[in-house]
Structure formats: structure tokens, C-alpha cells
Image 1 (tube, rainbow, N blue to C red):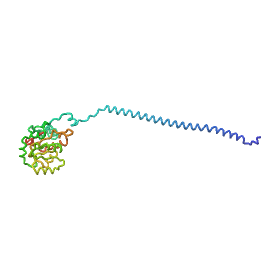
Image 2: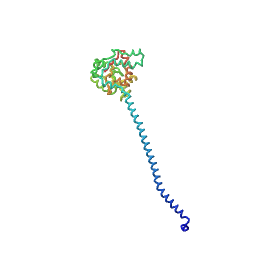
Image 3: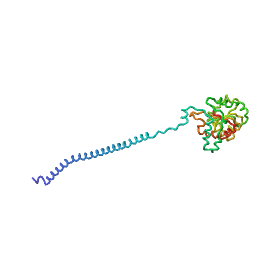
Image 4: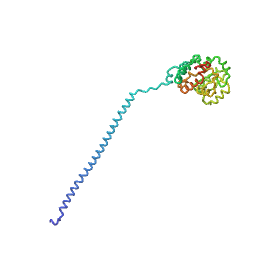
Length: 287
């Protein structure tokens, strides 16, 4: 019997048993591997989620206090007050007519750091240097009739070229044109000339002044000063200087409130008008 079965029968039984054991082991090992990998994945995802949450919480913790600090700082800081302009001040107050003291104070203030004390004393104008000021009730023609009652006789005696008897100083070309229109009832046969820079070359104005006799000049301080420097306009026949002192532009600024015009105006006064006032040959009026 032993020979019929062969010598390897026991090995076959062992092999079959080992195969069975292997088959039993394989299915149990596979699920264990899957569960381990799934657990690792779950752990990784949980860690990433936790880290993201931590980052968000840290960001919110960092941002929120900054906002609170800025708000606190803003509330703690005093608000900057806007500087009041001339327009702001004058919009809440009634306009006051100019007077000789206003011009005198302007001259003193302007030359305070440019002239010595003695020279400043020499710049002071006497009350006799001024015409009566406009009290804001006059038109230009009615004001000039008041301060120049003998105008007809005066302008007829004027025969010199490149000079004027009456000089009206204003802030702009448009204002000069407006004032010339208002002169109709006052000037009579007298001739008025425009003395501003807009659309008019200075050479043309010099030729015009040299060509014919003119009695009234209406213009801006800058162009009038330039004409005097170029000897295009002489102050020899000048008798009256009327300043358009009380008129205000859209921003409620007077002629002397605008820095660049103020500089030209002071230069004009230095060019010979102040000396004429001291010699009692020129009178200044504030319209």
C-alpha cells in the first residue's frame, strides 16, 4: 500500500495544507493594508484641516486688534481744522468801505522788512494826500464828480502826450473794461485809454500814448508799472489816482488781497506815485 501511494504523498498533503493556509492568510492581510492606508489618509486630512483652522484663527486674531487700534487712534487724534480763507471770513461779515488808514497800514506792513525805520517814516502819507473815500453808495461817475468837481476845466488844460490826468487802478482787464463803461457820464469829451496786458501789446500802448492826448488811463498795476519803466507813460501830468479798492471778485478778494497783484501795486506806488503825493501834486482816492 505504501508503494502504491508513492514516496511523495505526504509532501502533497503538506503542500495542500500550506496552500490552504496561504489562501486563508491573503484575504485577511489585504483588508489590513487598506485600513492602514485609509487611516493614514484620514490622519493627514485631519491634520491639514486643523492647520488651516489654526491659520484662520491666527489671522483673525491678528487682524481684529489692528482695526481696533486704528479706530482708537483715529478717535484719539484731534481733527485738523481747515484754515479760514479770506472768502470764509468775508462771507460771514458785511463789507466795510476802505479808508486812508487801510492803505497806510498796507504800505507800512509791506515795507517793514524792506526799509529802515527812517525810510518807513518817510513813506507815511499825510491826510492831505487823500481824496474822500467811497462809502459804497456811489457809482464810479458819481464818485469822480464828487472828488473832481472841476474836471472839465482840468482835462481841457491837459495838453501833454504820453501822460494822463486821472489814473484808475483795478485788478483785471475785465474790471477795467467795466469801469471804462461806467465813466460815460463823467468823462465828457475826455479820452480814456485801456492800460492792461490782455490782448494788447505794450508797444501798441506806447505808440497810442505818444500819438494823441489822453486824459484817463484805466488798467492793472502790472501793465501800468511796465509802461512807466519803458517811459511809455509819464507821471508828469498826473493829478488823481483812484484805486478800485472796495471791489471784490467771485472769491470776495480785493485787489490787494491777491498776492501777485499786490506786489505789482506796491511796485506802482514806488514808481513815483508816493513821491507825487509827498510833493502834493497827486491825490489818492479809494473807490
